[in-house]
Length: 178
Image (cartoon, rainbow, N blue to C red):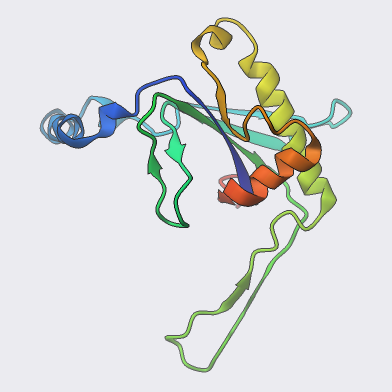
């Protein structure tokens, strides 16, 4: 499934740079505690994209850091600004991809077609998740801590605009299978 990543300005990523990062690593190595001893994701939640469903079909994860996704594929890193992330995954995506052997040569990579969002129902779930997370972010006291939404961004209001952001910035990830 493709993740849609909502990032808002909130908390410091600078705690994980240069000397501060080195100190956190040394502290963890020496004492086994500190920021490096906790999970990267601080909170997870599951919810329904539609009220008539009998179980959750969306998982979201919140982390007290934010990614810079403006670079080329594989070059993202923490943003220099304060921020947090809320990542959503459809729990039971219907889109299916494929993997095919490209050659008899075992050193050759297979042909992979992830086929993210090929089924409209999966895209509908991601749009619903975005709208639910936005309503969540409007609640106090969280709303007072947020300066602005970064992705998909306040300009992405229609379903098509939200999906265009997902297609451009979304990434692979699925923690909800198996």
